[in-house]
Structure formats: structure tokens, C-alpha cells
Length: 111
Image (cartoon, rainbow, N blue to C red; front, side, top):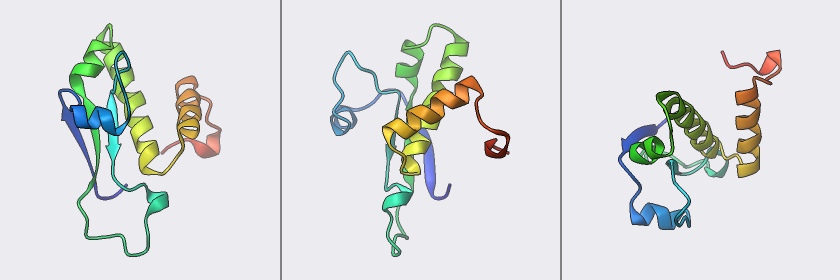
């Protein structure tokens, strides 16, 4: 991953919620903003970094314990990094499910 910032904000802005068309009672734990790798052209460069934002208050409010916070952060990062790589929602959900069940074949294990 190159030229990407990971930032923490307290909660999403109304503009960010509108960007993803999310309305209560749904929660936005994180947000990827940028151009996915699969959509970049050969001349893509000299641009501001893509950004992954984690929303601290939302994550904490949706969690019952410190362990839940850790899991929520992990799941949110996996999800938003998937968007950076241009994966679909379905592909990301499959990866999340496999990751948390420990179902990666030996040749696919992250180093």
C-alpha cells in the first residue's frame, strides 16, 4: 500500500454519511476515500493520499468490551483496505469471514 493515510476521527460528518448513503440506525465505523487501485490510470500520480478513516466513538458505542473494540478495528481495517484494492463488498465479506475463521490455505497466509 502506498500513499494512503489512516486517520482517527470521533464520528462521521453528515457529508460522509451522505456519501455512503447511510442513515440511522446503521453505523459507519470506517470510510475509504480515494481511487481504488483497480480504477487508476497510468497517469495517476502527484495526488493527495487516499484516506481510511476510523470513527472512534462509533466503534466504541458498537462495542461491549475492549476486546470488541479490537475486533471492530480489525474488521473495519480489513474492509476499508479491501476498498483500496478495488474489491467488491461481496469479496471483502468473504475475506473477512475466512480471516476470522482462520481459513486461509498455507500459500495465502500473510507474512
